Image (cartoon, rainbow, N blue to C red; front, side, top):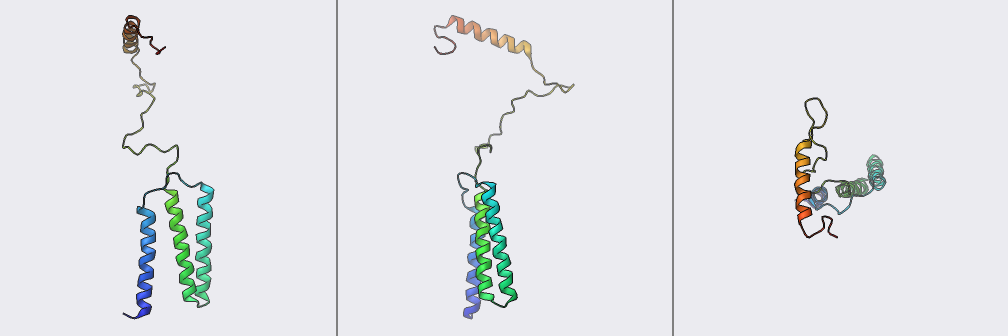
Length: 137
């Protein structure tokens, strides 16, 4: 294999590895701010434009290096965007619990008030017969 082809193949493998790493590596602990991500994507687009200009002026090695830098910056932005925010649901596989009771046939949330009162009276009875204060005082 000629050295030029081997160099291009190695270069392509490094770029594919960079993209795969950004998609498969463990996400950062927190997501980058939207402003930071926009700046990174803007830098990647500028690098692509400079690479395009280098291609048009027949500077192929420079164009390849600038394109690679743009791909690296875009991959970094993709990896940083995968971080978790405080509002994200937990990763433990449990769905968040809906605080609202399910709606009844008329669209109004249904609530079994009789059962609630029974359970509350039972709790109050047990708390009154217990030596412990119900609030732990």
